[in-house]
Amino acid sequence: MTTPTSQSVNRGVVASVRGSVVDVRFDTDLPPIHSVLRAGDEEEIVIEVLAQRDAHHVRGIALTPTQGLARGMAVTDRGGPLKAPVGKEILSRMFDVFGNAIDREDQPLDVQWRSVHRAPPPLARRSTKSEIFETGIKVIDVLTPLERGGKTGLFGGAGVGKTVLLTEMIHNMIGHQEGVSIFCGIGERCREGEELYREMKEAGVLPNMTMVFGQMNEPPGSRFRVGHAALTMAEYFRDDEHRDVLLLMDNIFRFIQAGMEISGLMGQMPSRLGYQPTMGTELSGLEERIANTDTGAITSIQAVYVPADDFTDPAAVHTFSHLSASIVLSRKRASEGLFPAVDPLQSNSKMATPGIVGERHYRLAQEIRHTLAQFAELKDIIAMLGLEQLSPEDRNVVARARRLERFLTQPFFTTEQFTGKPGKLVSLDDALDGCERILRDEFKDFSESSLYMIGTIDEAKKKANSESQSNSNIEA
Image (cartoon, rainbow, N blue to C red; front, top):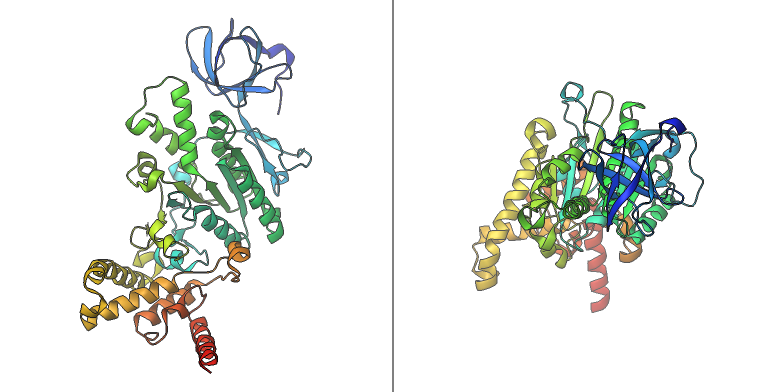
C-alpha cells in the first residue's frame, strides 16, 4: 500500500484501548472519518476512524487484533482510507480485506490501489434494459428467473443448502459467461474458503475469478469492510474494462452482524432485536453499488442466513427490499429430500412478467405455482382423511404437483462426490418443456421416482424403463 511522504506524516498517540475500540489523540491535524491509522512496532495494527470525538481525539475500530496495543503508543495517520487492489493481476488470486494475497503466492505488483468507499453510479449512467441470466438450474430458471445486473438473494436458515446452491451457480455460470467472477466471503469458515478455492481450481475457472475473504475469526471491522473491498474490485472490471461481473457474496447476514458488533462496541443504542440503528443505511451503502451501467453489469448472488428460520427478522426484511429476485430455501423440502430445497411459493422474481420472460414462460410458471398451491391446501385433508376421499379432479392435481416437485429437483455438479449422481445442466427450454408435459398429464402413468433427480424430461423414460427391467429381473 502506498505510504505518505515523510514530511506529511501525521502522528498521534493511543489514548485508550477497549477491545477493538481505540481512541487516539492528535495534537495538530485530526484525521477525517474512514482514515486508516497504523500502530505497533511494525505498524501491523490497522485502525479505521469512525468518529471525531472532540478537537483532539478520534475513535476508531481495529481491523486487526489489538494484542500488544497500549496507551501512549505512537499512531501514524496514513493520509487516506482503506484501499483495495484493482487490475488484471488480481485475477485467479485470493485476498484479505487489506489486499494482501492469502493464497501462498507472491503479492501482485502491477496493481492500482483504490478506496473501498465509493459512491454508487448516478441514475443517469444506469442501464434500464431487463435481461434474463440463465443458471441451468430448473426450479430457478422457470419460477424465479434472475436478472443480468440484478441482485438475487438465497434465503434460508442453517444447513438448508445456501452455500451448496451458490457454489453450483458459480460452477454453471462461470464456465458459460465471458465476464469476471468475484467471490466475497464475509464471515466465512476457513474450511469453506479452502474448499471453494480447490474446487474452482479443479474446474479450471480460477483464471477469471478473484476471491476476497474476511473470515469468522477476524475482528468485526475486517468482516464489515470486506464486502466494500470486493465491490471496488468489481467496479474496476465494470467501469475500466467494460466487462460483466458476477459477484457472489456469502453471507450478507454476517455483514449486518459485523455492523451490529461495531455499533455495540461504539456504544450506540441498539434498535429492534439488538440490531444497529444504522442497519438500513449500511446495507444500502453496499447494495446500491451493485448496478447495471452503460459500460457493463455487476450481477450479484447473495446468500442470506435467516436467524431461526424467521423471515420477519429485521436483517432478512431489510435485505429483501434491495433484491430483484428472492430464492427462499425451505427446511421442510430439504427434509423431504427435494434438492435444491427452493420453496416455489415463497420465492419470487421481478423478472417473472410476460413482457420480459415471454407469454409462454409466464403462463407456465403461473400454472405451476397454482398447481403447487392447490396441493399445499389439500395436504391437510390428505393427512386427516387420506387420498381416497379426494375428488378425481383433486387427485389429478396432487399427482401433477408431486411429479412437478420431483422434476424440479436436480443433481448438482458440486455434490457428485456425495450423491454419486453426475451433475446436470438444463436449458430453460428443456425445463419449460418438461413442466408443460407433466401439466398435460403425459407422465401420469410414470412412477414419481422416475422424475426424481433427473435433468431433461426425456431421462424419465429411460429411468422408468431401467426400473421396470430391474423389477422384472427381481420377480424372475
